[in-house]
Length: 317
Image (cartoon, rainbow, N blue to C red; front, side, top):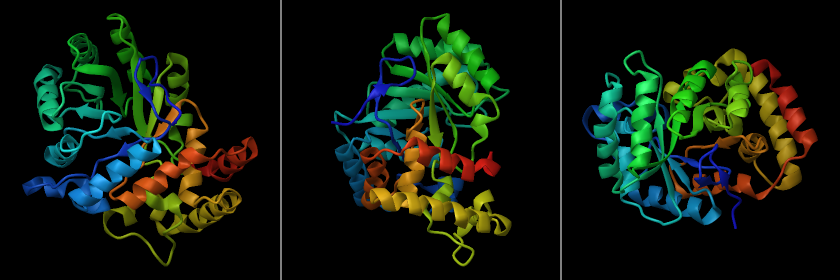
């Protein structure tokens, strides 16, 4: 049986690793120009995405993360085509950059329609915006919890100060702030220095880590002689001046992985999982990727392994 634990202070029980479904679904029109589609490639089709869904659930990685904004709702629609009682669905508001807090109820209803569900397990504010008043949005989120449309409330890309503001507004309604989804990996350790990780610890909030494999850099697949194509080649880990440092890190990941029969990427995911407050959501476009990511649930790192990786990547903080 997979190990489950509460998502922050909510009553939603989640696995220690989830699945990022950002690139899922078949986008149409301008939605095909979504940056994620350009950076990571388009959909591999319903068959492979169904395979990723099935492999993840079979391995215990039952939390699937999407957003209304992903490819014009295509990701939500794909998840809506898939059904399993064990699956947990997390999605995000807003669907457009110009939305205000008052648009949330209608956009939640639209997300539920695309997902073909009467509720979502985690509803998150995708990113802070001057157009969205945080206390007002959290009050509307609490209304959605009371109406049974939302089981847990989260935020994404929030600073420590914004987290505290959201937490206080929800607490006034008796609802916990369950999560903050931010970029976090061995190659992006900013949450450790900008106060977000400490605020999560203080408030009892789960940190959901997106890009936990640093856009694939931590898999060991890419080198100075094999840079990724598309927009990814311009990401920080793949800039030529960083590739030498990256190769030494992936060499350490492979060395540690050899002791457990695991890959560099699986070790990188496990480094995050060893922190009980952190839940990584690596992307998976096919069955093979999903099964490989879920392998991070099947072993443990020693304290010495965790410290060695933290020390080796200290300059990436």
